[in-house]
Every structure is written in C-alpha cells, then in structure tokens.
Length: 303
Image (cartoon, rainbow, N blue to C red):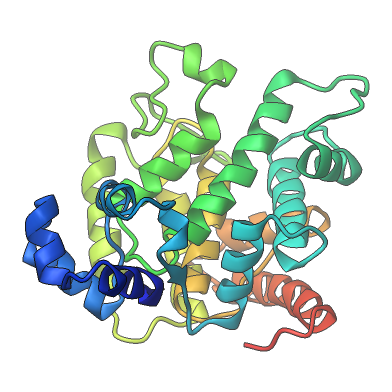
C-alpha cells in the first residue's frame, strides 16, 4: 500500500482538488482513484505531478506494508540504511544463491561488493561472478519493489533479465536474456520441458498457483519445485526460482527461506525427489526459514 497523504496535502495547499489536478495534467479519473485508495501509480504520472508541484516524486508518498519484514526492507532500501536486515539479507541471499551455482566469490567478498562497491580480486574469480553478484543485489531490490504485485510471467522474465544481462551468456546468439530457452537443457541428468512447450507450462503453473485463496509456504515451495522441473531459461533457473520464492514470501507475510550453500546437497535431493517424496525439499526450506528467523530475532522483527 502507498500513503499519498503528502501528495494530497500539497494539492490542497495549491487550492485545487484531485479531480481538478487530473484535468490540468491529463491524468485519468481511474488513476486519481488509485491515489485515494493508496494503490500504486506509474512513475510517469508521479513525475508529472511532482513537476507540477515543484518537488521530487519521493516527497509525495510513503510505501506501507502489513508485513513488518517488508516494511523494514522498503525503508532500509529507500534510505540506504546499512547494518540492518536489508543489508544482511542482501549479502547472505546473494552469496549462498550464487555460490550454489558455481560462483567462487566468498561471503566476505560478496559483502565487500555490497558495502563498498569494490572487491579484492582473488585467484580464479570470473568477471561474471562479480557481475552476477551485483545483478543479484538489484534482483532482490526488484523483488522488494514488486512484492505486493501478483506473480506474473513479466516479473519472472524481468528477474532473469536483471540477473543475466551484460554477462558472457548474453553475447551468445541463442541465449535469450529475459526470455525462455531456445535449446533443450537437462538438470541433474533429467530432461526438462522442451523449449516449444515452456510458455504453456509456465502459464499453467501460474494459473494453478494464482487460483489459490490463501498461499502457504508449502504452496510457494511447490511452485518452486515445479518451476525448476520446467527449467524455462537456458541458465539461471535456480536463482530466479529462489528469488520468486523470496518475493512471494514477502507478499504473503511468510518468513522467507535462505538455502545455505552448505545445505545445497539436501536442497538438490529435495528437488530431484519431489515427485516421490515432498518432505525432503520442504524440510530443507523449513531449515532455511529457521536461518531467516534467527536473523529476524536478532533485529527484533516479528512476523
């Protein structure tokens, strides 16, 4: 939700009503209604209003959430607060997720990149490891920005684009950044959904997921497992899948989970055995949730 009380007060100071402002600036009545309801409006519209009111867009609203964790993340991200839960989740999620996929950056190097935007290069460090670390930070930011929005193909593809743009993979003619795979791929020696069937498979998975009334942690884990079985992208599926789970936990006021690199074998076993035994993956994710719960407790945050 968005608190536009600052915007409304500035409009009153100008001696015009919201509807009059809409007519002056060519803003639809539907958008004006969104302001009254505290719904998100486009940046273009917000910029147009702020130009008219001679202020900055960020001076006109505050983003609010019923989820205490999401509210902390929004505030700490917006004000660049270091040393808080936003800071720690960025470093720990990025290090573990990337390291599971082969990155050679240590947690200390990951932390250094986040905190100082510099790195002490070690032996065997690839440029892509550094790029994908920075990209993962931005992908977490994007998850926070769209946390309250319904999950969609656009969000899923955007996460892939954020992660993979400007990497070596993006220079390959057959590698689609922010788009579904063109070549068949396998995971753990198992076939995944054929390229020509991916769009329909993702659409069906989203339909099943979004049809649920009350999303639970198990629903999110189920989506994650089925997403990884489809393996829609040429590369980056694991990271995108875990980011989706993070975003959905924030949306539904569920404590997120971090799969630590040391637990990756249990995690991969859970994905591989999902069809026969769901408990392996669920238990591993619950363990990852305990990791985040410990962090929340350290910062005095309760969900």
